[in-house]
Length: 208
Image 1 (cartoon, rainbow, N blue to C red):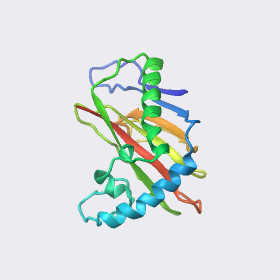
Image 2: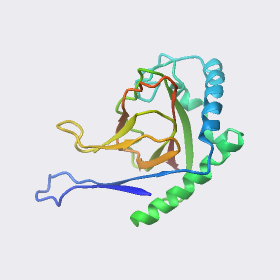
Image 3: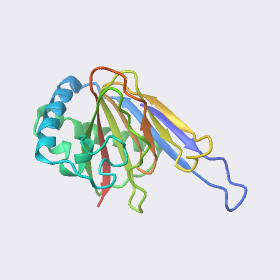
Image 4: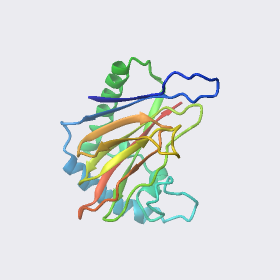
């Protein structure tokens, strides 16, 4: 497990900004992500057909993938409810990593939550724009799992320093890699230049 700590220096005025957050990352080795990729691509066609595109503003969650993307249907499905055997392995793997991540950074987590997940499929020339998942009082943790990728990275932006020379933590995408981060941390990706689809699973820990 890799842990990235981003912590501000001790403030010397009452108005100086403070931040202190961790990003955790490791590879999941016991799941066949090639099978997961095939399942997602098959489900993508069905979901796009079942749920027509919407012109609602930012229906794609501010990712820039557009109203015709699978991402824009994220409200209509929870990937962790799919019945396929490899899909069913995902949630226990996330919960195991979550538990070890909190133990590693010595933070007592929230126990009363559910996990909502969706898939993102990107074609050549597409990218995910900077966006974040939550900023409210119950904002907690979010995550990404790379299912199929080629020479791309995800960049996690310091939520305080986003404008003038923003600090971004670069994490190179690898198939089977899981990343946990605070839901308030903005993130974006490189432009996908591969011929095969770039496929990821995104999820939120939703505090009840």
